[in-house]
Amino acid sequence: MQEDILSEAPLYKAWIERGREAGRREGRLLVRREKVIYFLSELFPHLIPKAQEILPTLDDPDILEQLTLNILLS
Image 1 (tube, helix red, strand yellow):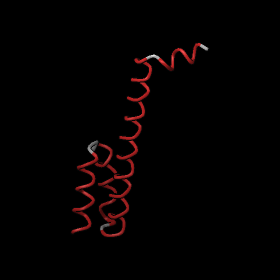
Image 2: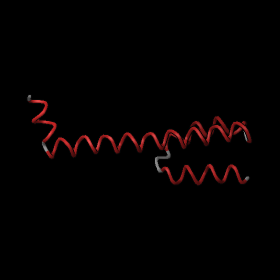
Image 3: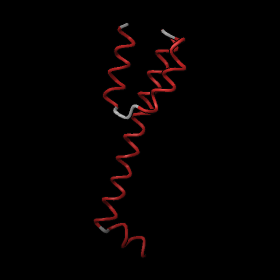
Image 4: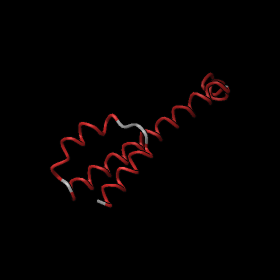
């Protein structure tokens, strides 16, 4: 019963949605980082160690997507 009341509270709903959005963003970052590593491993394997060092510091999905495109066009 208390869980039902809590789950209907606007603040609770906002927190849950904020957590979901953060999870989706982290998922997008993870997928884009994995794509960069995959294409580097196929095209420029000698760059993998440096990429593994740098990629965790990049937190913009658009930059990671552009990096993937640049790798593919190289």
